[in-house]
Image (tube, rainbow, N blue to C red; front, side, top):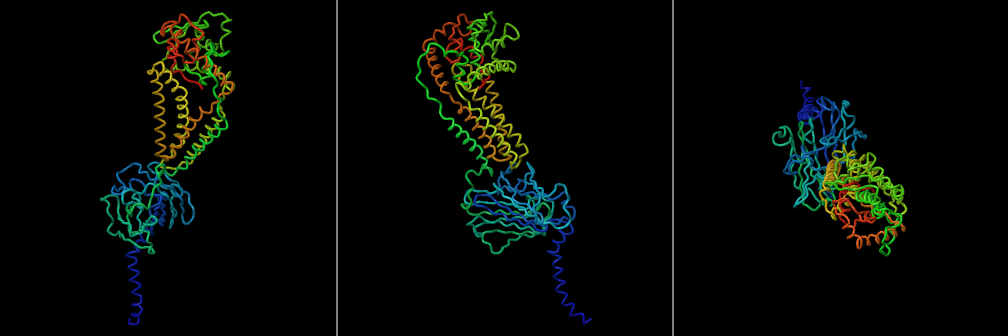
Amino acid sequence: MNALRPLWWRIAPLAGASLAFFLTGGAISADTSEKGGITTFRSDVTVNPDATLEVREEITLNSSGHYYRHGFVRVLPVNPEDRWDPKYVGEYKRDNGIRVKILEVTEDGKAVKHQQGQGFVYPQVQIGEEGVPLRAGEHRYLIRYSASGALNLGGAVDTLYWNANGHGRTVPIAEAILCIHLPPGVSATDARAEPRVGGRGVSDQRLPETVLEQIDEDGASGTVTYRATHLGPRQSLSLAVSWPAGHVQAPKLAWLGPDQRLLAAPVALFLFYLIAWLRIGPEPKPGTVVTRYEAPEGLSAAAVRYAVTTGSDGRTFAAVIAALATHGCLRVEPQDGKYKLSRLMSDRAMEAKLAPEETRVLGMLFEDGPVIELTPAMDQRNTAQNTRYVFAIQQELSNRMDGLYFTKHTGVIAIGVLATFLAALLLAASAQGRDTSGTLFFTMWVLFAGLMIGLLFEMAFLPACKTALRSGGWLKLLPGAAAVGVFAAVIVYMLRKLAEGVSPAFAITLAALLLVNLAWGPRLKRRTPQGRQLLDEIAGFRLFLDKVEKDRLDKLNTAEEPAEMLDEHLPYAIALEVREAWGDHLAQVFLSTSVMR
């Protein structure tokens, strides 16, 4: 027995140390090896001078027990539930504005597949195959990501509140370390730290066995580091660190989000149109206007208006009706704001003198009988009918006059619009943000509807407003204004959704692409030398109508009475917007008729 005593005294210290190990640190290892969980969770958060964060998380876990049966999902601590403390982050917001970009994810030293969630599950990062249990044993993960919008800047101090582990986790953590790397120029002695360990709020305090301590790693002067042990499920180590203001400056355009580079797309489109505009060159300068007593030879009233406006509208249609009445092909009778048109028996010689658009409209008007009633009502049937007439006029005039009197450079515009849609498709397909699920649909809808509504506004609504300003009739613009307003409101709503789901820069990029196309399209039209000469002749003829014929035409017929005396100059007065009662009233009926360009 005495012989065994020296051996016992040698073994006793080792036995005591081993017992202490199992009672303290050994308990941590036993928890994770037998029951599973996270052995170590280290977070290094670097505060950059531009107010962004770079986060590096090193996680060692054991997949034993009932954890990780559906794979490993890391819930990044950027959602309102994890940033719950109003003392540091303000009142609760569904979207707190924090955006994350995943930089690197590895498992056991190798890159691994990962997928970030959308919408409410935006903070969730699925690592590996979804729903596939982790293989038994220990795993080491490295997750690196950047975050913007997490700092509270302003006043005398800047503050970072970071909940390292998050409260959505159902796995215990044996050891958690949170290290905040302060901005350049800030030392640990300049910073004030407020650590906390536990669950969210006051109802889930720290466990009795949880230990929290500040540690000094290698004497680094620009870091604040805390360590916590024995964290239970939904328990986390969080840290609020404040330092003197002035070391971190958020960029002035930081509110645009991380996608500011997207704004290069509308800039490039603008430069494309600018270069095309410069290559096309300026229009010929106006010549001397000489009073003319007749319309330019071979041009109908509708053609004269087309030469001036490069399009057809309700006033063009009114000028065609007046021309047909002047030639004795039909009779026009006002009836309570409407117009009754009756087909007259005209000789073939007279009809042969009609312009092609007048002949076509004459046949279309009386397809179903010798009498037709035209009304300014905005119902679907009437609008479609009047649009059909204007479209027919536009076709005839475009075939005769495009390329001869002016060029629209539709090829350049088509390339610009095509480039817009292709760029938008690429941007939508590669968009990253809190919720990109509807990005492709919203993007295409905004561009298509925006271009259509913009063209309608430029080519129909603005000319209609001009006519209403001359002759009254603002009430007739209300249905069109309401329709444009509804579509514009939907476009604005979708742009706001894109700003929230992707980034403000993405939404502004789409809006800018729309505006660049709509602004440059009309400015690429150019008059040919022959077209410039024609405009000078039309200006001289309009001068004659305005100074000499206007009063006589105004006295021939009253606004709401059947025309008894029609003059060959009347259709041109309507087309060139020379004020006279009968033609203005007729044109007013078709104020809201579609415009074709």
